[in-house]
Length: 228
Ligand SMILES: C[S@@+](CC[C@H](N)C(=O)[O-])C[C@H]1O[C@@H](n2cnc3c(N)ncnc32)[C@H](O)[C@@H]1O
Image (cartoon, rainbow, N blue to C red; front, side, top):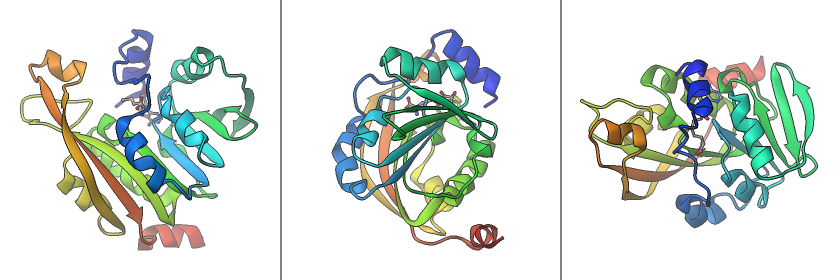
């Protein structure tokens, strides 16, 4: 989606995707999945309070979010003192002396190394239409070390009449996108109320799925980039 689409949603306060409490999948599976995580990446982080949960259990958490208002809201609403710096095109806000950082900028422009050993994707992949998901997954793979673990939360629904965001992303798509270099494990699923935008289009419920994904190795194109 265009940045203007998300800016408008934040400006209008249409952010029902935001959860005040820790995501239940993260609370349940995070302690095991992220137990050895040092550097955790949270793409498309919004003002997610899950950043605190992750920061309490790792050395460094980096959230990436391109709407300034969301980044400002995270620090203001949590009354969190922060320092400002800049990293290339990104405006960086950092709290807990270096441990929790949000960089305001486009996820697709983020460069590695240093790479990350964990990634949390809740409402990130499903926020993107198919053509951007096709760029998102290679970017995620590029930014992770082999052995890195991800927790990915997706939703599925009958999408022939309703369109996202949030988009329906199936297990089959996940396999086709990540399967060539990652091991994917389904953790669980449950029915959830349809998000606001889908409800307005007549859908009452969606199925929410959680997966753990472990990157096994760098695919050839990423390995070439790393050597260059
Ligand atoms: C559905 S929200 C989810 C936010 C967060 N993950 C959560 O669980 O609350 C998606 C967020 O991604 C941001 N976003 C979308 N595309 C982005 C991009 N290319 N780079 C950085 N942020 C992006 C939007 O501004 C929005 O805040």
